[in-house]
Image 1 (cartoon, rainbow, N blue to C red):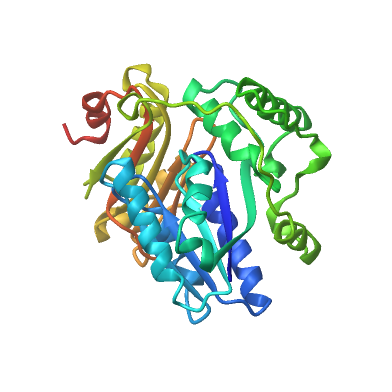
Image 2 (tube, rainbow, N blue to C red):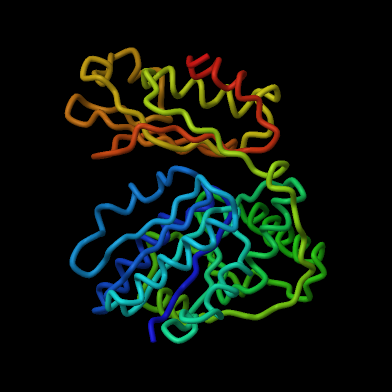
Length: 335
């Protein structure tokens, strides 16, 4: 049977970055890996960030949204059926950051998937500097993703203080309590380490972590009132303008509760050239050169990254709740 690992984590936690490292380690152990990007959104930009690890021993499949939840579940199951015939040793599934883990278990217990696949690990990636307060739906997703986890892996812990890490663990436990889940985590149970310093022992701990079938109170949310994703295609915007617009959108309450902006933009050759003035006035952005005119954007209220990448897809996605699309378009210059 093929073993499946589910890598969960809230929006922006670092799931894709973790998968790059985890998949690379598994390939070094001689395993053939399939990665399934399962996103409710109409466009999956995270898949672009995995291109450089793909090859003979690692392939990527995608289930993009653009349909209702039931249709998406059918696509997910159909894709797993097809992947079951590809000779993988292990399949890594990265769902969207608003994924209900029960959907994963439900799918694998159905025929014919129950005859082809076995669940290996549920690995939850948790931002070490988790927001102190989240919206009710976000709190539920945080709890549901961690409840069944065999391993909690903190991301960006090297950037967090001991107080912030302690606050994150307490927040996680409050979220679990709010859904009447008996499970609680201590800091010693959570892998808290700079990912650049992961050893074979650390990866083995993750590889053997398994999962827990924990009971909690199921909650249902109206899809129309939940998380939104706004897509802006082929933006004609300079690097400096994009940086400014992203900060403004995240900071302006009139834009709604925006908590992540991600995607890629392609600069014209002339726009990719950097002036000395721009270099001096921005220390948060790694500027592009004329030989690298794609930029990858990843922004939240706590961190901002805009850096060159070899290739991309001309789309910027704004994710949040109760968003004002017209106001956001004003900042992006697309009104």
